[in-house]
Length: 399
Image (cartoon, rainbow, N blue to C red; front, side, top):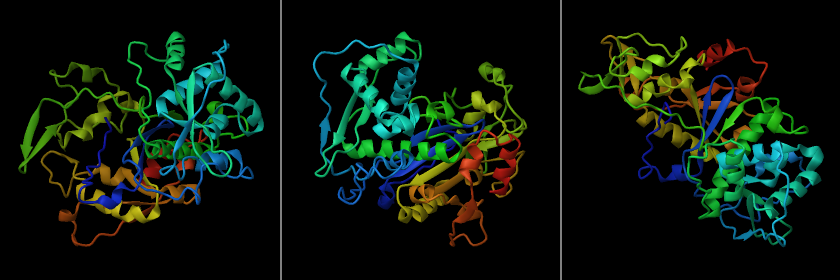
């Protein structure tokens, strides 16, 4: 469960169904990606085909993968003859594990991850061998001009290979990435494209392969969720709202005593939380990190951005305070640690983002006026390996 939650009223804001994505960032260079909305836009296939020009670099092709798929019909790959017997390599297993975690990846995604742009032909041959041997499935949108990129997902045989090598928990049930509409697939691919683009911008090598040079750990929707023990049992009532009293040593919750907490995760015992999602990350392994998580919402188009921030301003209500301080004197972490941008800005290298005001409308002096707060949040610099750990808190404070 994510530590912060945006309660979006999509029935009130239909424009926000225009392909929003969510990235959840934690310290120690770990990046987890989750889906916030389902893609509903129908872009022109002729204007934005996934079969991009070969004049573009592999990194550029990977960054643009998944565009313009929502109206396309698909062609599934056929396996030639009987299933060949092959020797699975460590690279094969690592790529299949990533594929399982993020549902779908294109040819350019897998090539830039496993081989780099200097070994394109060798990578394509290996992917075909893995497909023909039954470890991965593939399909692609039908294109009138040229051939579109193959899109891959893990098969049951690939999952069994990961279980045999103890790379995943074999006690869990295999659930293949469902294919109901290519527009859903487009959503996952565009999110993966953004993450791989960030990896290159943060110092990963598109030549040597990102699987070994990516400067952060990429967690997909399967592995990136927080295992939360649930809300605390001791509740209070303050100002007519249900609150939660912070007590990490509560005898009723012995498992919480074993959690190692950093200074950022520690709160005084007299802290009162209003809405329980605020405490989630402090009761998991992420509590040992030097700073609290940040959340990044990404819209696929710039025109949806302001309305999304405005909706967040209406719905971000969680806060905590010490003693019996009121909401105006309390801390509103979702408003301080959540940023909004568009896919267009990221691909253009523009790290100017938006955030909500620090206080909800009812607590601001001019509560009827809404203006997104601009911030400069240089995400690649935040994710670089050579970034000092101490810079995390300073950067967030500056934002």
